[in-house]
Image 1: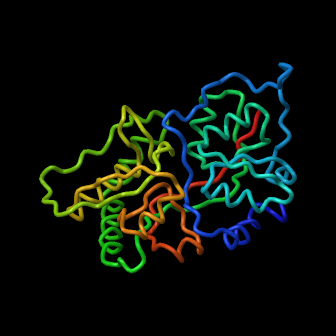
Image 2 (image 1 turned 90 degrees about the vertical axis):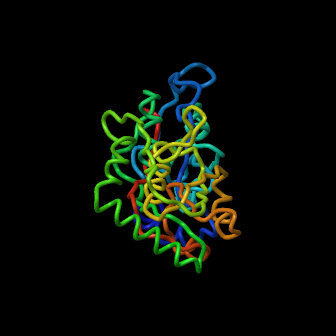
Image 3 (image 1 turned 180 degrees about the vertical axis):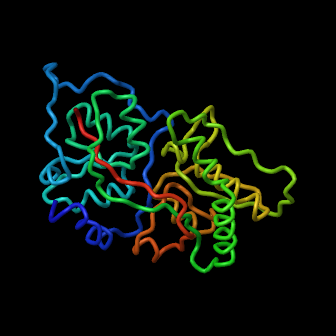
Length: 278
C-alpha cells in the first residue's frame, strides 16, 4: 500500500471517473472448479498475501467497474487484473494467475464457502455504503424513494427482507408485492444480476435484497417495478439517458459518481475484503 489501508480511499476516489459502484458475481458464484489451487506441475501454489500491506507489488484480481477495482488501482506497484465477472477473478486466484482478489464481503463469503482452499483476510480493506442512484434533477422521484426507504426501515420491512438473504440459514424467499396497492406507471431499475445476495439469477429470475427492497419501495410509491439487467458500466449511462429511472446494484457513493447521478440515503453498509489462497 502507498500508506495504509485507510489512506487509499481519498486518492482512489479522486482518480475514478464515471465508475459504476458496487460489485457483482455470477448467478452461480462459485467457479466451475472447486479443486485446490495448483501449479501446472501439480504442486500447491503458496499464498503470499497475509495483510493489506502485502498487496504492494502483487497481482490483484477484481471485477471491472467495481469499487474494489478502483481501490486496487491505488496499491503501490500492484498490477490490477480486471475481469468481467468476479467468478473469473476467483478462478484466476485458484490458478495462481493473481495473488489476491478484492471483492465485497457478502459475495466473498459465497465464494469461500464453496471453495475450501480460499479464505478471507480478517482485516477489512475498506467500508462502503450502498445507495440508490437516480438522474440529477429528478428530485421529486428521489424524495419519494427516500421517504419509502425511511418507511421500510422504520417498520422492519427492510430488516425482514435482508434476513431472507443473509444469515446462518437464508431461505431466499422473495418479497411478495402488495396486490391491493393502486399503481400508476413503471419504475425501471437498472442492475447487474451478478452480485449475490443483492441481485443474482435463480431459475431464470432476478432475485435478491435489492430486488425485494425495490418491490417494497414500489408498494409505497404506487408504481410497478421493471428490472433491466445490464453491465455495470452501463448503469449510470442508462439512468442519465432515461432508459432507467434508478440504478440499484450494490452501488456505493463517491464524489466522482455524484457528478453524474444523485443518490438516495444509504440502505446497507458493506466491506471490501481480500480473498487469498490458504
